Image: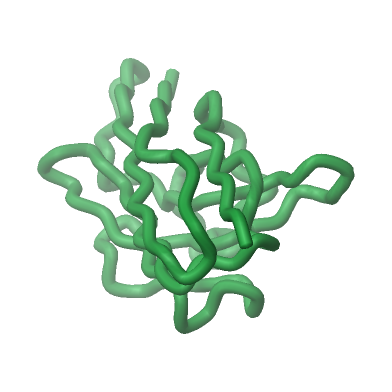
Length: 128
């Protein structure tokens, strides 16, 4: 079982920054570095969007076009923690943000929306 807990959400004005964190607890015998990780967001009335993904070693990342150049995904495996640094925030970034995990597969790691394990989410609100 993989349990994920997000933190760091809040309210910020447009142009501001926030950093989200996600800590993992893995109880199925796997190790943290066997998993690709990602961030997903969902705004009211909108479809879920895969925001970013990162491979187990952290050296390769992938981003939605809507956040490229503004958001940075990273991980510290020794702390079993995933991060999302969000800069130049826009009102359209307002959403519930979820972290997600999946056993790494080279052909599917970018498909964050298909990851089986999700956290409970943390709200990000950006005001204009």
